[in-house]
Length: 425
Image (cartoon, rainbow, N blue to C red; front, side, top):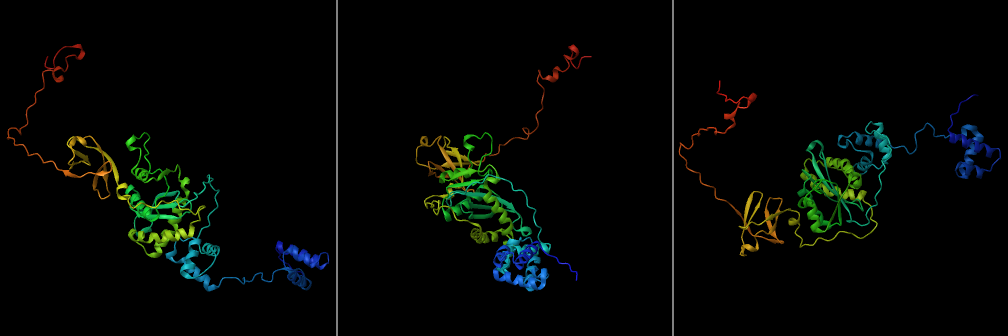
């Protein structure tokens, strides 16, 4: 009887070894070692080969569903998750976590990925040749280097407009130390987040940022007074070093964190039903903690480099805007088109021409300091001048007569070398 058998390369190799054992050319123990099975299972293969021939080495499970196949109900539940609009845009990894956390279904990421591909909800990415960048070793201690940046994005999708997420990421551990949604990436926004971060963790050794104008003066030839930004001045007072990266890849730790946040944070806030940035800021600390637990690593050193914040430090004054002004002879200071009169019992000559620091707070309140001592000032209001009284004759327009040497009177005298006036025939 003619028959056609389909065998894999593995089954062909196995058949040859079993045939050699059947012909007594090798021992059963040697045959089991060659095909990588136990001697007991090799004896089963040999018995089937003697009974059924070549068909005995072919798997009896061929064409049948696997014993480890997922239950039909579980597969359908996963498909329901995949097609749920609430989980639109979820990747295989994040959806696997939500299946375990919300649905109680524990499966592998690859299983979810294959189901998403089959359902048309995931497009496999083509592997690109990696861009090679020189890798920088992490700092050894937590707080030794903190990467800071902001990312403008539609964080609440179509439920609200765009906003900027300010984020502080520790270089040694990838821990998210602080974050906040703000309307714009401004100095006062960073200043407010810094105060919260310093109060919670202490002062870091170094901040690592990009070359945004809040952090660095980008003029080619800045003058001495404008060579440092307000943020740089504030950090200098606190003894914190500021380093500006030359490229986004140099601070890749926080750039990759933003990619993760733009994927996971958006979907987490969608699941929580958050529709405004006030509630988003209330939810953000919870997400930052879960992010750190999921993605942070252990530092090489157990020592924390953060310096505890001295309660005597006035962070509100340090992170206000500081400007330099000169006291006039009348002991007055002009700032933002307003004149302030100094109130003091000291002699005038002791203050005239002295340099003071004008401190502008976010609420537009102004304070003046001389050698770190607060000056008592009051706003000087000039009395408006009284309107002058004029007669009606003075309001009439006066006639205008050109002067005797006006160019109009000499017009044409030198035209064509003829000396005549425009009135000559």
